[in-house]
Length: 403
Image (cartoon, rainbow, N blue to C red; front, side, top):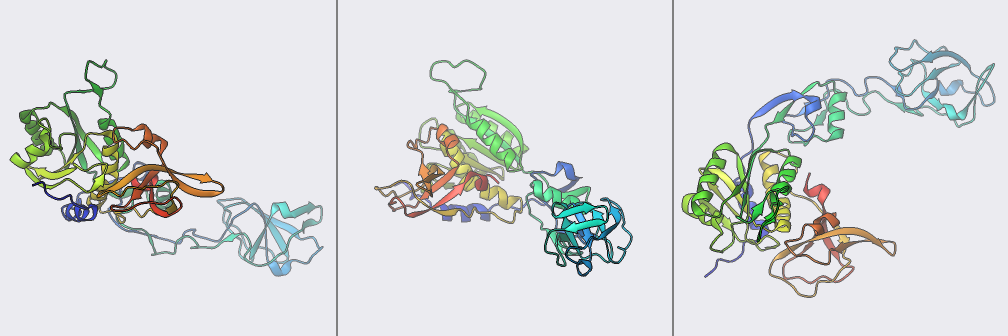
C-alpha cells in the first residue's frame, strides 16, 4: 500500500529540523556584501547623523528672530562638509542640504519660500522651530542595534552599513550547492534537438534561484538514466557540496533512479507531499550530505524550490525570517472541485473595476514555465477547499518568495 501524502507543514518541520546553521564566516569588503547574510550584529559606533543638519537648501535662523515683513540680514554661507561658526543673533545663514546647522539656529526655511533683497531675505512662510532639520542621532543613536545577525543585505542595508563607517563586514559563508538534472532526453541550450529530446530548463532555473538566495553553485551536471551513473554522480556531488539538488528521477517509473538510489545507497526520509505541483518531491542524504530530489516538470521545480527548499536554505543561513508571510487578497477566479493536495497557482495581481484581485493563469500545467513568467507570484488553494470569486486567499509575491 502506498504511504499517505505528507502535508506541507509536516514536511517543513521535518526538513528544518535537519537544517544545520552554517557556522563558517568570512570578512569581505562592504561593496562585495550585496545579497549575503550578516554573521553578527552591528551597533552604531556613533550617532547617525553625527550632527544636526539641513534637509533642504535654504536659510538657517532662530525662529524667534523672525519678524513678518522684516528682512533678515544673511551673515554666513554654510556649504556641506564644513564646520559652521555660531549664527550671529538676529541674522540668517545660507545653508544647503546636508550642511551642519550652526549653533544658535533652530529652523531652516527652504529657498523656494524666500525672496532675496539688497537688505536681506524676506520669508513667505510660517516660521517655527525645528522645520527642515534632521536631528543628530535621528537615524541611529550611538550603541543602538543597526542590523541583526541573519539579515540579508540589500541595497538599503549596504547603505546603512556604510553610514556606520564600515569598510568590511562579517558574512556567513555561502552554502555550496550542486545541481544535477536527470534524463537522457535533456540537451543543453545552443545545441540542436534530436528526436525525443528537450532543452534542459531546470538547470538554469535552479542556478538563478540559488544565486538569488546567496548560494554558491559548485557543480552543474546532467545524469544519465542508469542506477550506476546516478549513484556515482550523487556521491561525487555530495563530496563537493553542502547540499545537492536534483530535478527529475523521483517518481515511480522504471527510469526514476534518484529516489531509488537514495533508498539503496543513502537515506530517504521524505517522499510524496500533499502539494500541487510537486507531489513526488524527495529528501534524504548521500554520505551525510542532504539531497533534495525535485520533480522534473519545470513549474514543479519552481514551486517546490520556493515553498520548500528556500525555507531550508534560509534556516541554514541563520536568516531571521524563514517562512514567507504572504498577503490576503480577493480571488479573481473560482475553484469548484476540492483537492486532497494544497495547490500553488501561478497568479498575479490585477485591477478590475477599481479593485485589486488575484488572477490565475488559465493553464496551470506543471510543464509550463511561460505561466510563471506571466505571473508575479503564487496563490494558495487550500486542500479540501473550494474558492468563490471575491473570497480572500493567500497570495505570495515572487519578490517575497525569492528573497
